[in-house]
Length: 351
Figure 1: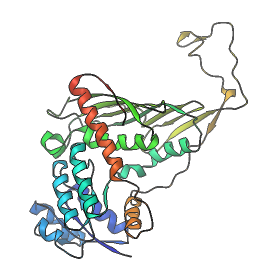
Figure 2 (figure 1 turned 180 degrees about the vertical axis):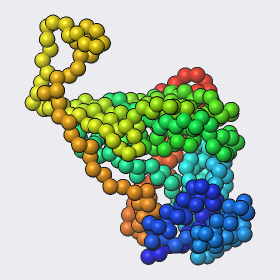
Figure 3 (figure 1 turned 60 degrees about the horizontal axis):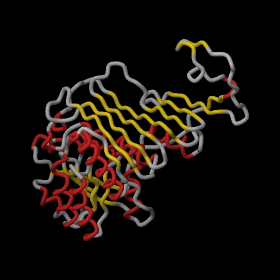
């Protein structure tokens, strides 16, 4: 079965959606796009798609089964609701809304209309994240204790409308929503405590360097860090578990995984151990004979699998992977993280 789609917003991400679908998702035919900027619509010729003269014209096209919303964040709610009520299935770029209350309004209309609604959390298909998830699912690390997930850039300011509060800019709503969605897929237990440091260093009015702290009911503690002025990058992931440790250094997914040997108990010496850290027993290096180095799990993923799942759902063959209720949970956590910085302290919660 083939589906016909259109894109609302033909900026960087809107153009990416068109090109990605055209190259990798043959079940979807992109018919056209609408953008309020005439210069953006000039790209439709190169892309081989139709330029709609208005949003109403696009939504009134009976051939369109699916619309993708790729416009500034503050316009998502009204546009999504209008598209759903026009009888269209809807994919919305992240962050889906500026807060959880707005998303609740969309979900109410989605239930009223019975149409598909999903948020483009494409980074669930990132290779680095799926390596970490596979290591956890395969039991290579034991129970996870400390997880650090970091994205570090060096260009200082937020780009374009992402640097403006009224448009829903800032790092928490930009990259934060991705890293939160990933960590909440890695551990699906309740979040019982949150705190945040949302700094505005180079982009007045919005958070551009942030650190998020989450404690899960399972006992896993996570620190998520996103920065815009880091000249020496740390690792992308550092994951500690009760029986192993995994490190992924970069987007190329270079890294290591060490696991305790089941039959190699470590013995403590009575004498003090002298190390580069000084005299210590607790922080002395672990004997190598008690560990195995394992290859990182092999994973095969592609961002286009998001749209393949959308097609499968519309054909009645699969369950939706990125559910609106999952996005609502993420937005409720984001609401509390904003509040934590505003009030200057963390919160106990059950999210």
